[in-house]
Length: 276
Image (tube, rainbow, N blue to C red; front, top):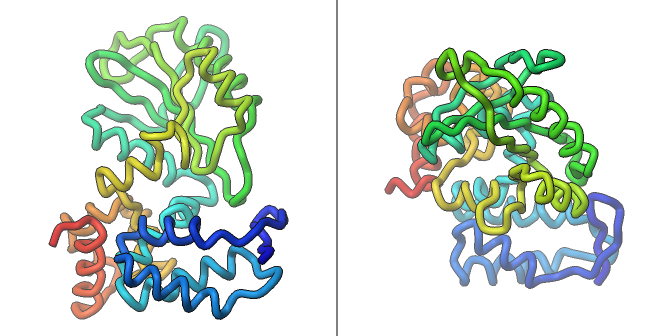
């Protein structure tokens, strides 16, 4: 059976691929088998992957909100836009979880011109800059022009000493982070130029997806018990991760949730982060 991807490309429906994504949500084999059977009864020639995703998400949510939230992770990261400001904060949180010091949105003077840097990180006296490339489009990729451009900025900045974590710091490494994917040329250029990349699927064993699964670094935008407006309010309050909701439940009162809804949100958050 042929289905239509977000890009408009027509591909063969793969129950195996859908099964794998459902299992990664935390749902059991029995639940996943039941969902697959239900979906296979509903799908038809030419159905979009978006419609299949909606069906799977709805069925998962009936079983457990936390399963649906995990399944919704890629979309949840996209909801940190449209400007990408909250995505930058999210990336900083990922590095904090790995014991880095972080600073966001700092303007530094290079040898030739000044540059606004999205995130700066420090660990073991090594300082790196991180440039974040946020895409609202689901099929948008960061091509080779991105690392080429950022390499020139890095080269300009590493020539100078800066006031960052101390008054006499220099930047010796550079990262590029995106919520989508890098093209093969972008990856090859970055490897050759010794730039570090982080995307939804790269590096293979230490990407956005695996970092979330390993350390439970889910953004609040993945939660199914909150409305879009409520998620936006939390982001404005600098509550970026689901873990931060658990550790600061007062933020839920501040955005106007009733005591009953707070219980439901905290239940989903605890299950999502496996705190139960």
